[in-house]
Picture 1 (cartoon, rainbow, N blue to C red):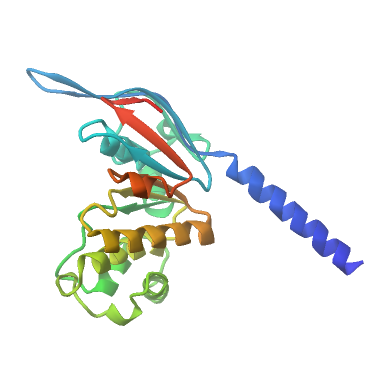
Picture 2: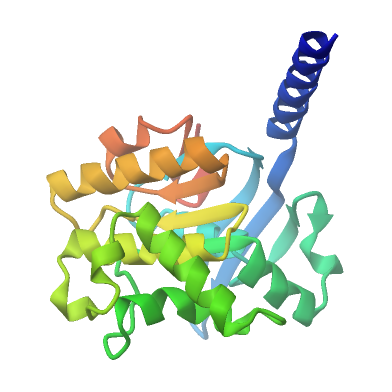
Length: 246
């Protein structure tokens, strides 16, 4: 009887995972973003309708100024649309209080930036640990354990006491990825994560993201100019002049 039960549980787990992967994690409906000055109106995003499912690895491509980074900022709740609605994990963003929004950004979303955004005066370990300081109820021991575990995942366990200036570009990007991973986010938003790296380092970082996606089923949205990197993801979404074209 025991083998039958095991098989049944495996089938149930598989169906549950498939079901979850088909549920929207990020949903944008009729999103517009307009920047207004005294003399000019710039439409950064024009009536964007886009759904990113749980566990997807999606790349966003398009020429400079087409709205890619603006889109990522809206997904990460770092900015608000001029009109339209954003849902994160089935809940409209407008239903969150400011305190709840801050918690979602800190707990559910991890950010990776092209320019790394590391603090030069802090060690590698302290940089990775920094966002966890804002986690209510998390003690210093747990923060340290999470940071060390994240650095081990990206292959930098031997660099914990180094400072960013002592690292190569690829290593600094690995630190930035570890910082995003330490909070165990459900969503990772990566803005040109290979943009400041040479081709060899870029390939290494991309392979690391693909591995992390496979192992943790994290939802990843990556902005990139690099077609070869984009084609490694599950879906490529293209923008032009603020509109989605494919």
